[in-house]
Length: 114
Length: 117
Image 1 (cartoon, each protein chain N blue to C red):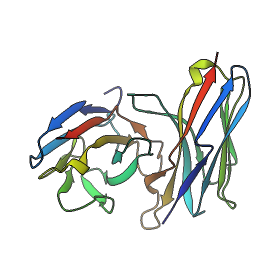
Image 2: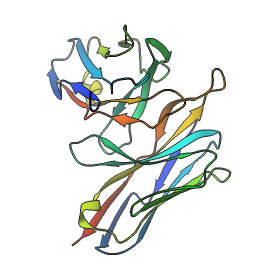
Image 3: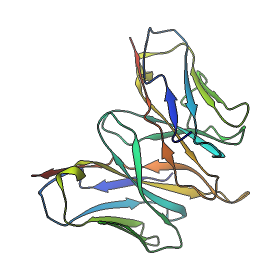
Image 4: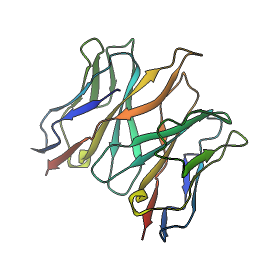
């Protein structure tokens, strides 16, 4: 696609529910990154993929968070048993590869847990 | 652990002024440094990317410099315009020695810039 696409743009969920956030990277981009951004802060790294391989998941806050990219294109970030503290903007970025690392971001998914 | 600091946190200047935004990072073993612009309710827009071997990059009225050894970068905006009002974020990536390339970005908190008409 022309840019990184994230869906949904907004998600309101009740505490305890599972949510799945989707990211469709720029066509041909090998590397895909997930970030979380709290209000007034810079984005915080969660995890990233090269092709379908998850290279680093050290930024995932706990085991309720997981991500996958099964075919090396679209990625899903899943949060199980959501808590209010999970409320944030979730951002996805892609880059051509791990060497050409200029990152291009989607518009994000605003998650609100009530 | 890499830490990125941006100074000032907020800045308000009259239209037409030249200005400098500062970014510092604690670990000089970076792969590259990237400056982004963030508008309210929107995504991040990449402005400039400087590889660790480079000293500066220019795009239009923007010039970014990098002093890797001292852990500093500056973003210079010439002849500022109201449309430049946004939050500017600095981010660095770390070099991955196994397989080469870089991993994810570490961001500063940003500088909130307001250009007064």
